[in-house]
Length: 346
Image (cartoon, rainbow, N blue to C red; front, top):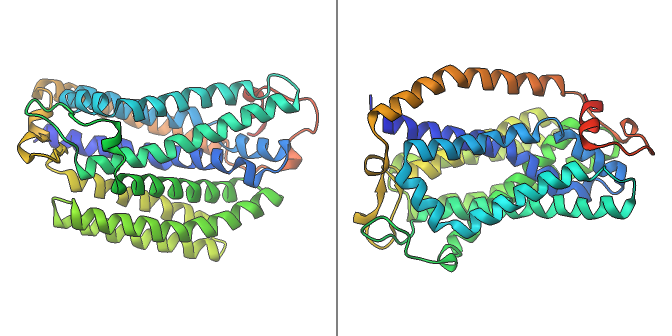
């Protein structure tokens, strides 16, 4: 068995889990001022992700750790070359966590409003930058003979990558709106459903243009047309489901579209993990970037043992906090800390 290929696929699976789960977290954060016109409305939106947002970030940590262990050359080049955008994403994730925890510490409207804007902005930043980063992986970046990135920050801001940022932005807005439609009631639900219909349609157009561009210009494999088709069908199904009020199906279809997008991204790169745009001979491949077979074997056994436990726990947490929330569930006075709010939303 080619363990390096196995781990390339597993890392794609980890990124899929992260983008599906954290995608609606970011969407909820960006939509807070739209669906929640008052403090109580914004608290409803925030409480829908309160018990799960930090667990969703585990997928990112695992994807990063798996890349470091399985493909150290890829990790080194990626994190040095994409240093500034990844630093901005990291800072956004840090301040978002602080804002979520600190928002309810003081019963003051101005205090809460400032932290709300921190949450909103820290959701917008990674929603755009993740798309920029992944699009550059598909397109390729300039590497020297030692596989070191020789571009700069502005090298990453090419039209294809910027459109990729718009794609993840729109997808996450759609995903978050659909999630809120499932998890809220009353006026918050009505606003979320309206946003979901608009964003689902926008996602079809923007993601469709980017996916065809990626396949025609940068994909190294023709079979990834299947991933393009899968994502397209799923996005159309998501939009159709929102029009019919079937938001459970819409959420599933949106998740399938994200799966198709990840398959396209990793499939377009294969057999590279980081294509060189200046000279194909300088590309990092699955073979020249991977760890030893022994390292990969140990990682495989650890993953086989621990992954079912993690998945079972996360599924249980979603089941426990499954009911809808509305403004009637939020006390008008007596602001609680976020930890307490998360428990009252169960």
